[in-house]
Image 1 (cartoon, protein in one colour):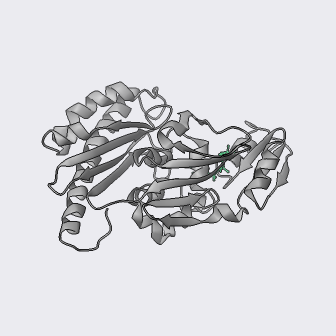
Image 2 (cartoon, protein in one colour; image 1 turned 180 degrees about the vertical axis):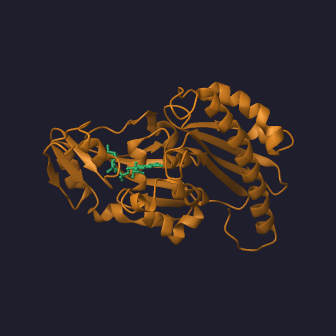
Image 3 (tube, helix red, strand yellow; image 1 turned 60 degrees about the horizontal axis):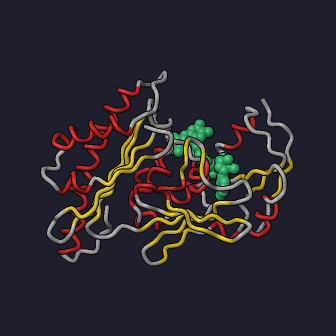
Amino acid sequence: MKPAPFAYVRPARVEDVLAELATEDTKVLAGGQSLVPVLAMRLGRPATLVDITSVAELQAIDRAGDTLRIGAAVRQRAVERSDHTRSVPLIGMALPFVGHRELRSRGTVCGSLAHADPAAELPAIACCLAARVEVAGQNGRRWVDADTFFLGAMTTGTGSDEVVTAVEFPVARPGQGFGFAEIARRHGDFALAGVATAVTVDADDTVTAARLTGFGISDRPVTRDVTDLLADGPTGPAELRPALAELAAEIVDTGGDAHGSTGYRRRLFAVLAARELATARRRAAATAATAAAGTPEAAA
Ligand SMILES: Cc1cc2nc3c(=O)[nH]c(=O)nc-3n(C[C@H](O)[C@H](O)[C@H](O)COP(=O)(O)OP(=O)(O)OC[C@H]3O[C@@H](n4cnc5c(N)ncnc54)[C@H](O)[C@@H]3O)c2cc1C
């Protein structure tokens, strides 16, 4: 099928984007990798598409102090290739799983957040890292924590007259380690289940923080503080798995479908979470040791 007819505008400033969005029946167009199929299947029929990719302010990737800011027009592939991305290792771990390179050369990081697919990788790492999303509207700009940005499947709190302008990720510090894994039927497919993990240790190698985010397991990314689990004893995957199987029973509620039952997704989540928490714990110890030895090496 072809999309229903629509008008197309390509403003050059955020103010002009907002002026367009203030009119009836408009939709933001970023990379188009999710929106265009929706239009082609006539699941949506906006009167006007507001293309944001020519807005200069939205095209930058900036490292400022402890944060990495990615503008809403920045393509996923540009982020993948940027030197800055090494400062946030989870981005580099997750991006190769987002569809295929051809899709990433058009799709944007912020577009993936705004689309809010529950099985998407970038919303999950944003939640795991406690990133924040900048949203511009008629009354100015506001910041929304990733944890509260996603309200349900394909649903965020962004109004139809608002636009996501950027996302800010905290850069990794020595003593932090990360893990990421997903299971999909074929590489590039949306995940049946996936996890992102972030662990912090102090100079005595004690775990001071541990976060675990699951995706593809509910109607949005689900994050848990699991510091106690890692601080309280052995941290190999086999020792962690029973507690994570219990957690899976609590948080994995995606119904069964042709690709896998709820029980199968629970088992996937528990196995991946145990493995990637153990991996992140090991990497955290390594980056702490590297920092203590005075070797300037990026955290991983
Ligand atoms: C075959 C295929 C496989 C894919 N596989 C995966 C996958 O494995 N993992 C994955 O995560 N994604 C996957 N995708 C989706 C892809 O990553 C998209 O790029 C992404 O979901 C949306 O980004 P976009 O820039 O293309 O947004 P668009 O398609 O332009 O927009 C998507 C939605 O978000 C809104 N939007 C976009 N930007 C903004 C903004 N700045 N402010 C407010 N609203 C905005 C649009 O109005 C629209 O509703 C796949 C897509 C296809 C076609």
